[in-house]
Every structure is written in C-alpha cells, then in structure tokens.
Image (cartoon, rainbow, N blue to C red; front, top):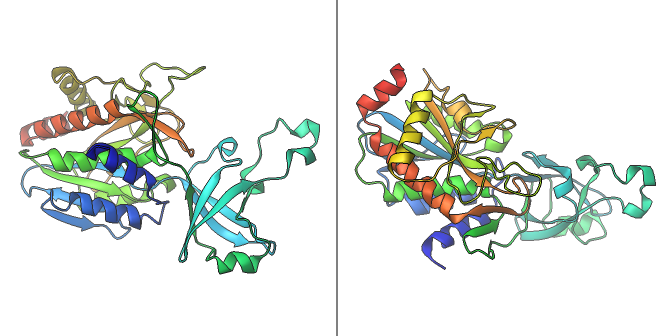
Length: 352
C-alpha cells in the first residue's frame, strides 16, 4: 500500500464523533508538524497548522468529526440507548455493526429493533424511527454492560473495513465525510513550498453539530480568504442525477450550499485556475447541507468564502465511496489557487 492510501486508510478508520475528535487530531498533528511553522489550537480542539507569517490570511479547512452516536442509557437487560450525532437516515442504520469506545477498549454492538414478525402488516412499509432503535452488545444485564466499560457518554462509531474496490481508484470506508477533506488539507500543507500569503491549514471539530469548530477556529485566524474542503454529493447512481455530481470527474466547485453563497470573484478564480492547469472540475450544488465555509466567511469583518467538495456516494452511512483521482485533483486545485492569492489578488477579490 502506497503512502497516500496508507494515510487515507488510517484517517478513515480512526474514531472521532463530534466532541470526541482527539485521536484524529493527534494523528493529524503527527502528519503536519514537520511541514508547518506552528501548530495552534482553538479552545474546542480544532487544529491550525500555520505556514508563513506575512501576506494575506488564507484559511483552508476540513472537519475532523464523523457522524456517529453517543451512549445515553443502559437498560436493566443490558441494551444500550443512544443519541445520534450528526444526520442519520434511519434506513441505513438497521442491522449495522458499531464500535463503542470505552476506557477498557472497543465493545462491538449491532443495531436492534423490534422483529419484523411483530410489526403489523400495515406498518411494515413505514421507516423505522431512530428513537425506537437500540444497540445490542450481547449481554443479559446492565451489570454485564458496565463491567465491559460501557457507560453513558461513550463514543459510538460505525464498524467498517477500508477497502480498495474493483476499479482500484474507488475507495470504500467510513468517515469520508470529512476525513477526505482533512486528507486534502494535510497533503496541501506537505506539498506547499513558496506562496505569497499566510496559510492556515485548519482541521475543525463538531462540524456535524452546526459548524462549531469552524466558528471558533476562524475567530482565531481572522481569514480574508476562507475555503472549506468537504465531501460532496455523488449521485452518479441508478435513479440519481449525475450532472456535476460524478465520482472521478474532479472536485466540485460549489455554486451554492445552504450556508454560503460563494464570493463570485473567488469562485471564478477557482474555475479559471482549474481550466489553466487542466484539472477536471464540476460545479455542484448542495440544497440541503452546508460546509464549514458557512461560518468561516462570517468571522470578524468577514472573508471571501468558497466550498470545494469531493463527490462521495452514500454519505452519512457505514460505507461511503470516493474516487482517488478526485482527491488528487482537489489537492492540485487547492495548491494552485493558494499560489495565486497574493495581496493584489486578495484585494481584488475582496473589493469586488
């Protein structure tokens, strides 16, 4: 396995739900510390790798957290109740395996619901409500569960193996939302040498709970240019609309999402850069959902904001799929944009 796949696999497999991203942040710091001038943190735990101390402030960010669960209760029979962290579609949660992170190690669980044999015929076509689900860890009492280390507050993450699929550029894993964006920021910090700005490569916490780390980290940085790198929609599937939402066709330079109308001059610069550098790109839209740029562009007096996304199939599930070329082309595009952001260009973007 080459170094790129190794990093992607390790990032994907790490557990890190909103509010519990420590293992992910420690890994990221180990990856970037030799490639930045300074590493800072906000008080929520977001990581900020800084390169250069002169020039306009450019912030790029990928969030570290993944959708998951939080243990809230253990029943007397030993079943585990939970709170979702981030947006889950109930139908992708059934009969799935999970990892409960405890002080004593990982405890495996499976999503349980009432057996279908006990559901009235007229109710069987109705989606199962999340609040009727529980986690079955294979014990018969609350005492057994506690002895394993299970307790309220435990982090619960999907149990999934990283896989290189049939076409070896298709990669299956959990947490691509948004470890793939974090991977892009890591690689940009590693590759970037000469640039006419201060770059703040940021890895935010709690994006799935309302862009919380984006808000606090951008107040630390006070960016003039704010670019979020996130996972986007991959709808090139049966009954989907593949227009500008296709795996392998390049990063999505978003026209719109529910948290940001991008700065048009900055977005045009991104498109022109992709064309000049022969980097394939797509112009996607996210009608439901937003990226960290939604808060990043509002810090202090504001910043020119843009979202660049990597198309991803089956978001917010145990098994998402990305394309390796989209990762590589996103890195190339972000690097090329950053190299153009000198003071003159930033002033032009902000003044337009």
